[in-house]
Amino acid sequence: MKNVLIVSGHTDLQHNSFANKIIMEDLERLLPQASFDYLDRLYPDYKIDVAAEQKKLVAADVIVLQFPIFWYSMPSLLAKWMEDVFEHGFSHGSSGKALTGKKLLLSFTSGSPADTYAKGAPQLYSVETMTTRFQQAANLCHMKYEGFVYTGGVSYSNRADKAKLAAMADAAHAHATRLAKKIQSL
Image (cartoon, rainbow, N blue to C red; front, side, top):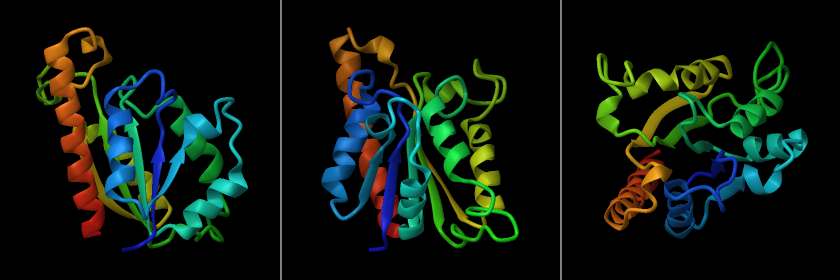
């Protein structure tokens, strides 16, 4: 298998996540040879060690970004990581070739059910529209965008309901299994 780097972009995975925490735990079990980068553990102060993160990216063949959708985008910590690490001269620009040919795969969740992300539905747009910034970043960095694995309806607001909590756990486990299979196919 190729060198896989899975970057958890949740801002507080251990204390304020349900589904993403399960997904990451399952991935560690399903893909023990992968490298895991927990941004909330490494950078709770948002002070990114750019050189260390760039070194991880250079070593990877497949880069997976795992995160929940926060306000129709990636969490602030993941955005800060990308802003700092994907710098001109490293990832793009006339001399920025470090990510050329690497595969980028997205893995994300939303609190809203998946069927609410459609034209004319409550969220107005399809979930695919939230991936355009990543597709463009991959293009700019000469990476190969490999699409996404998505699960909706895993809202923290359902944590008090045992039946909904069990359904969310099942959905998170299924997500991790689909994602591991997708990663292994790359």
